Image 1 (tube, rainbow, N blue to C red):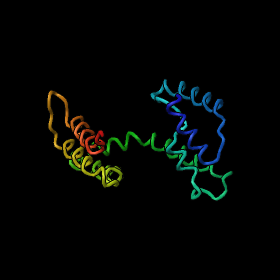
Image 2 (image 1 turned 30 degrees about the horizontal axis):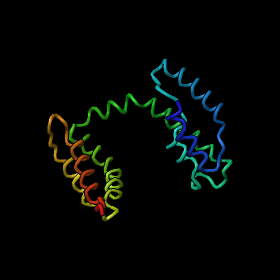
Image 3 (image 1 turned 120 degrees about the vertical axis):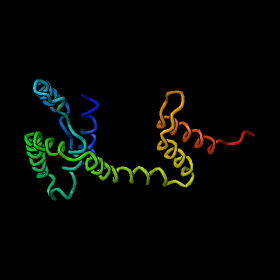
Image 4 (image 1 turned 45 degrees about the horizontal axis):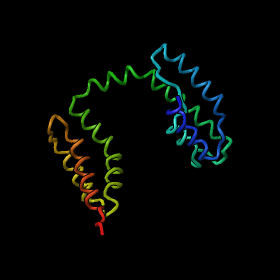
Length: 166
């Protein structure tokens, strides 16, 4: 409960709101218990949804921003009701189209990650090696490329930042 709700409370506080922590935890806990019987795994203070609903672009009056939460709740209910149809339509797509859609969806997070990884000039070589080894698919001792990419990247980064002992 805490690991899922704390980010939501932090987002609310950073936006200048003071959430009632104890009552909110009681309500989300009770709702989680009820929804567990119908397959709902958890009801929580979603940080991502909260951050979307709290911006100045939502409504100029801070006291009116809660209304967008109702819109999001309605959207999620509608999405839940349409889930069987959506899954059926997605399952009918050829696998190649699904792979292309997933690839397109991952472009933005990939660009953000690469921008961050290559931002500092002193880290570019280690980041390049990490990416190259991880993407290579190489496996050694039964351990996959992601592990070896991280190890090589960390080793190179560490060697670049060693200070000579005097």
